[in-house]
Length: 121
Image (cartoon, rainbow, N blue to C red; front, top):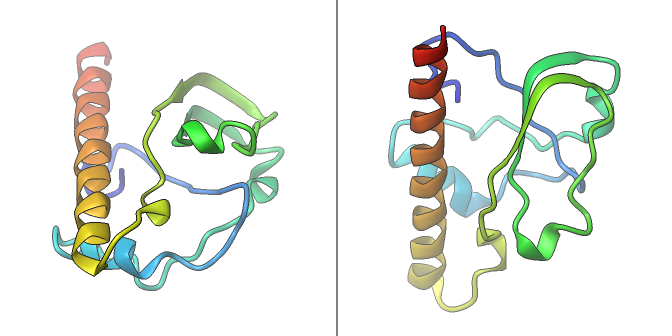
């Protein structure tokens, strides 16, 4: 969102199970010029009490039971359902292909979101 949002959005991220950013996620984002090597996963609990225009969850089918429910204020909530690339099986190239596929799906959703938000403003 930061890379594609034309500086119109201030993006935050959080998850159900905070951890380090997956090395393959860093690699495939670097391929398109997005550097997340210094990022870390944060707990959704750190955002409680904040108000957001949009909350977008990215939990896949398997994660639906652990996808964090954000009880904070939001003008609009969206859910984008993607597979979790960290669960990819196979050799490094096969796993990279999954990470790239999900990266492109997320990129497409962000581009559409940005376009729609411009049309509404």
